[in-house]
Amino acid sequence: MEACPDDPGSREGRLVIPSMAKEISLYVHLPFCRKKCPYCSFFVLPYSKESEDLLLEALILHLDQISPQLTGRNLVSVYFGGGTPSVVSSDFLQSLVKKIRALPVAFDPAIEWTLEANPEDVSKEFAALLFSLGIHRVSLGVQSFVDKELVFLGRSANKGHALMAIENLLDANITNISIDLIFELMDQTKGDLIETLKVVKDLPITHLSLYNLMIEEGSKFYRSKEVLEKKRPPDASCLEMLDTAVATLESYGFDRYEISAFCKQNQRSRHNIGYWTAREFVGIGPSAWSFFGQKRFQCTKNLNKYFTALAYNKDPIEYEEELDTALLQKEQAGLLLRLKEGIPKTPLLAPSIKQAIDKLIHKGWIQQGENSYVLTEAGKKFYDLVQMELL
Ligand code: SF4
Image (cartoon, rainbow, N blue to C red; front, top):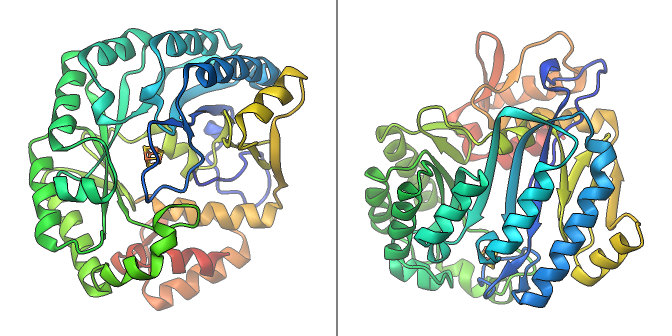
């Protein structure tokens, strides 16, 4: 579910900030969901206590297995994603956090611990548990504050659940709260989007991620893709909705620090910044991706196989790719462009990247700042095409 960045090794033409070289992140994939949302194409499993026990045992084995690679590294973020990490039991979370805290890493003083949660799971007790475990950032899968849209998306929570979850988090002293919103829904009007944005105005949140609905292979919606796509608002309306969302969020004091991410008081997602700036990360859990040692790899998407591989002390990996330096640099340039700081101007910039940037400047999709190349407003809208040009 995450984009995968470059390697911070020292080599000519690299764009990585040297002081980040020893930083590392940990991603933990908790694949359980109570039901599968029709737009979701992620690897998810129905929750059961037996599966949870098996997963915990496997994750503990995996943490033991990767321990030597992590030794001495500066752990700057831990992210529990899914799936729905908020469906697991308190015993599970306590055991897992305890194991992670025992890793032979240097825990960065400003380490960020994030857990993704569905609003209906965030009771006062659950929020208090997270706080007691040191998980002080929560990313809520809100998606919309319009109940008819939540029904269309197959979500279990309604607007009331989301507001209650935020209140419960604040009561537990968790103030670093992010929400996800989705737009470009079938039959969505600008008025519907404005209804959601109006609710955001007074929310005590620090971060917001805004995505457009994609109908991906593997999702239930994909089976009716043709019919559904006909109900999507026309391209011009979608672009207008995006402009409205960005302008409204900025008027509320949000900083669009990345194409899809907005924050207040500079509370950027430290974990996600790693994906855009080539920080190495290790992913554990079925289907989790890693980027480590100039390789990108993915764990098996089968809980039993994942457990069995680890029980026999084998890599639970089903896909592995050794990354060519030239390709890494291009990918990294594309990822840096997502950030508002863009690509630093440096004589070490590979000539092929510089050529692509010049072409994109000519098209009006990139502009030159004093020390960097950044996307123009048009470039942000057509980022996929910008990325293709860079590759
Ligand atoms: S969208 Fe989230 S909650 Fe829904 S099935 Fe996918 S991972 Fe689970």
